[in-house]
Length: 306
Image 1 (spheres, helix red, strand yellow):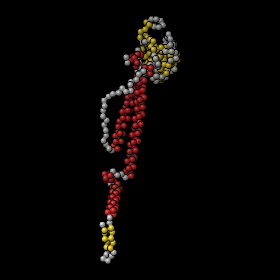
Image 2 (cartoon, rainbow, N blue to C red):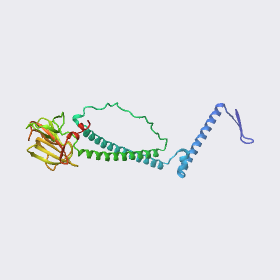
Image 3 (cartoon, rainbow, N blue to C red):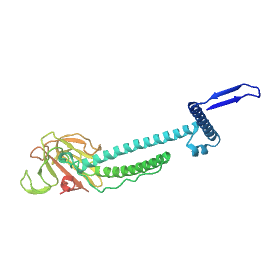
Image 4 (cartoon, helix red, strand yellow):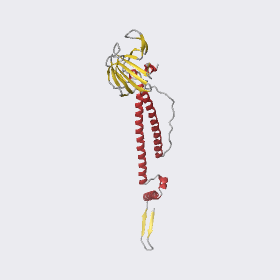
């Protein structure tokens, strides 16, 4: 293609030869220029919208000003910090529940009788589908998570309060054994032939055969009422547990508590012996309800299960 350019009636004649290559180059440059111009106009439009009408900018292209972006970032970080705090608080509550569970397990099954545990793969129950959220609003999802965590924390607090009350109540009941290890009962509660005079009589407790110096533990928390010598029981301890319950530990070789002392469940209170009216080393253990001796087997967990 040839273009002829005449500048005036007597001007020079100029000829410009345009090849296909020249045309393609011109077209490409023109196209790039138009694209660049469109981008500039769009950017200018968004900038104008962000400055004067942020909501319009959000609708046009989800654009946010730096101030809005910083505000959103602060909101997200605040929500995340709160969620992390709730998770940490929930983990602390789980630790408390785990501690209470261990206490209940210890009281329900004293160490000498923990011989078997369930298989780890023994599980079951129905299969329920998990509900899924379709909400795409991240802040809304954070709010939902925080609300769910608040409900979990309240449930955990209620559970902790309930089980604390249960554990505190159980700790005042003489349900544990006063000795550890293999326990041999040499004389049961009730009628028996007295081992010293050979006549039929009544035995108000259980006799556990143990070597002298074996540790003796309180079977429930309470207040030491008696800690001293008795002609029949030798060195003996009586602990008042409240609610009408008391326990006696007799024929000791050593007493390790004093009258008026507060003791917790499973506290070391003395050592076995053969003092008082005794034929050999053992521990005489009694449970009294409103001043009357009752069969310890009705209170001890191991025997109550049978």
